[in-house]
Length: 128
Image (cartoon, rainbow, N blue to C red; front, side, top):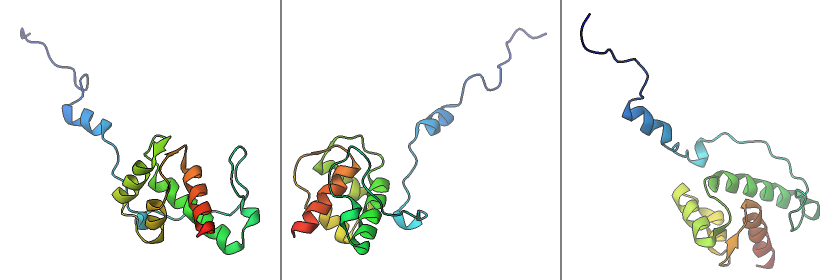
């Protein structure tokens, strides 16, 4: 018998394994994510704003897609968040086009969730 103690394999994780376990996953761009089939419908209970019952089919489809996209983009945020965090998260995801413009035009303030961002974009689209 030797005087040394044998190490028990797996008793203490390697430093690389600990770092990998705490690393956040890298977000994939929207183009690489699978599309979900989302049917328009009324807003969930307790949420204020216009339901899709008041919209045309094209508006309802755009609204459903907008909500789906924003849920993926803003997924890592802890709500409520200020406007600048919403815009910064969208920039980090590389959001462009109309959605980028709509987010930039959001009024200053705090947003309680993705549904409030969608409602504000919907309101501003109707008034413009």
